Amino acid sequence: MVLNAVKFPAMILFKTITSLQKELEKLRSPNLKIGFVPTMGALHAGHLSLIKESKKNFDVTVCSIFINPTQFNDKKDFEKYPVTIENDIYLLETNKTDILFLPSVDEIYKDGLKQLQHFNLGYLENILEGKYRPGHFQGVCNVIYRLLNFIQPNTIFLGRKDYQQYLVLKTMMRQFFPGVNILAVDIQREESGLAMSSRNMRLSEDARIKGACIYQSLQFTQQNISAVSFDKLKAQATETLLQNGFDKIDYIEICDAETLLSLKSIEKNKKLIVLVAAFIEGVRLIDNVLIN
Image (cartoon, rainbow, N blue to C red; front, side):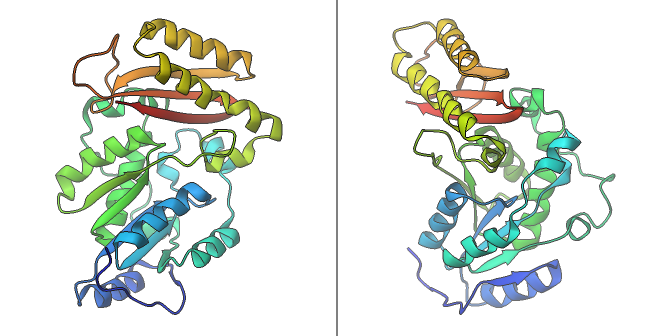
């Protein structure tokens, strides 16, 4: 419940750290609570659900848009990332975001892209997404570490679709930002069930329809987790995706939701998560479902 609601006449846009921090310092003086939503733009209803969650619980909501070059292990993927800044600003304004931080690469990485901090993330950065996107999570941690230092929010809001990223940042933040809360908000889906993603913009209409079979496979696994072996469930999901036009599958795994370590069968008192990463029309899609 927001106790000290601030009435911003309009969203304020900052492009420099200095100007942003001056404004945040003024807001912090009456002890206002700040929620933070980091994004790479190309906004959709999934991002807006994070904004809404922050506004519901905090006095001030800050959103950042920054396409972070250090988290792309494939340069072509970085170059293809959709840029829709005018529409993004419109969506943030209409959803009553208080502050937008829109920095340049030079503003975030003042010492350049070569001298990056290394974070101790343990095995988490080498499995699943980390295995197929080496260096990705170091890049994510580098930008979020900087943004949290600049903004110093009370809570950061992330989407549950990037579940491993959520756990990785939780690990990093325990060490460097123990006073900042981290909250994962449920996945928003298109009518077909396809998880909303900025990457969906690169899909044809046909691929968007076929892409929904990822969620159908996850639901089938969820519904049959007690009756069918994990190996058979993963094989069934693989076959379904390949039959529906997916080009390549990086992984389909059933894991312990707390550790992301792969499981062979149900274990007592362990919450499960099923995760998928697969390509259709050359676009890499990820999704997951939690199983109690």
